[in-house]
Image (spheres, rainbow, N blue to C red):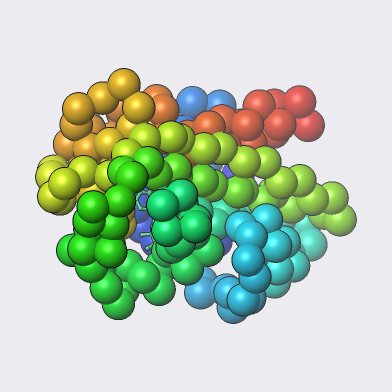
Length: 182
Ligand code: ITT
C-alpha cells in the first residue's frame, strides 16, 4: 500500500517512513507547507491540515507535534515550531532555568482515505536536559530526556527513538489502523 505524508520536515518523514515500513506501507514524501491555523490544541491543527491535504483517491497522512512544558503552562506546545525558529534550544533552556524540568512530547496524526478521516495520538513523558546533547534526531531532541533514561533523544539512534517516541506511538496506531482497513 502507498501513502502520501504531507510535511515540510524531513526528520519526521524519515521516522514515519521507517515505522510504517514495518507495516508494509510505502510512504511517499509530499513536501508541501500546509497553512497552519492558529489553534490552541494539536488536534485542531491536524484537522485543518487534513482538510487541506486530503485528495480524493489517495491515502494521506499529516501530523502535528509539540513539546509541552508544564512549568511554562504547556508552552511552547502548538507554538513549538515558532519557538524553535526564534529562541531555539538555548532560549528554551534559559526560559526554564530554575523551574521544574518535566516536559512531554505529543503528536497527533491525521489519516484521510476517500471521504473517511481518523486522528490518533501519542505522547512521551520526560524532562529537559541542562544543556543540548547529541547530534541525532531533529528539533528539540538534544534537550529532551525520556523517562527512565539519562540520554537525550539527540543521543538515541533512530531505531531507539522509533521504539518509544510520541511520533512512534501515534504512527504505529496509524499502521495498525491501515492493517484493519486492508
Ligand atoms: P510540518 O510541515 O509537518 O508542520 P514542522 O517542523 O513545522 O513540519 P510541527 O509544527 O509539528 O512541524 O513541529 C513543531 C516543532 O517541534 C518543530 O520545531 C519540530 O522540529 C519540533 N519537533 C516535532 N517533532 C519532534 C521530535 O520528534 N523531536 C524533536 N523535535 C520535534
